[in-house]
Image (cartoon, rainbow, N blue to C red; front, side):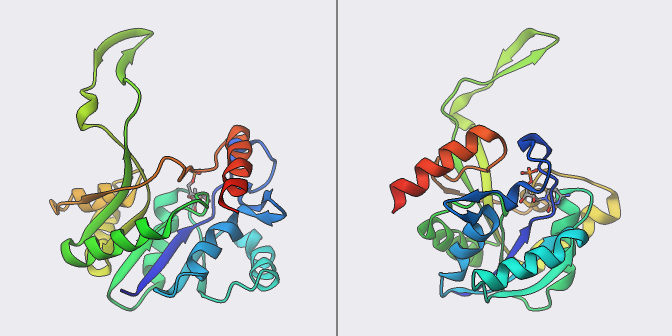
Amino acid sequence: MDYTVMMPAAGSGKRMGAGYNKLFLELEEKPILIHTLDMFEKDPACVGMILAVKPEERVQIESMLERFAITKVRALVDGGTERQYSVKMCIKAHEASGIVLVHDAARPFIHHLVVRELVEVAAEHGAAIAGVKAKDTMKYVQAGIVEGTVDREKLWIIQTPQAFQFDLLQKASDKAEAEGFLGTDESMLVERLGHPVRIVESTYDNVKITTQEDLVFGEVLLRRRR
Ligand code: C5P
């Protein structure tokens, strides 16, 4: 089933400490951003991508797309000050209905099988998000003192992609905007509508490249996939 990707790529990457957008850092001589876009470029079911970028990085990104022969980017929109606002700009630039996938540009290691399942589940049920079961014990801590332990059986670590019927995502995003609600992912916005969101089990290697250690992990993953 066909889908469109909305990809926020307008972060500052402060935690990476590179001094510039971490998505421009290279793994095996290719920027992280291109690794991520390439996953969808190669998937015949992906019919287009909308990318949210910082206005001052637009020219650089345009030339990267050309250099690495990324052809499916239909629009580059200006990103916002928060990730949710960047995705909102992508939503505003999209006109068709059907399935859309929101995916962080900083996650280059998503598997095609997970993408396919997300799209199928979202087509049937409206909303589906990628996640993995929590492996560690989680506790609430206040001022250095443990307040309690979370029931791990019910805990999932949520990733992107997150797949939605576009009309549902648009409605959820409009409501959040009207009410000034800021969430950490698009699922939260859909949850606020009372619409059930399904989980699709993903893989632990779908990491978000955030800090220097993730780059080392990324090199290892790329070698393993070759
Ligand atoms: O900073 P973090 O890695 O959590 O951001 C997740 C994704 O959202 C990244 O791909 C980043 O470029 C993007 N982002 C954005 N606009 C922002 C903040 C983050 O597009 N204002």
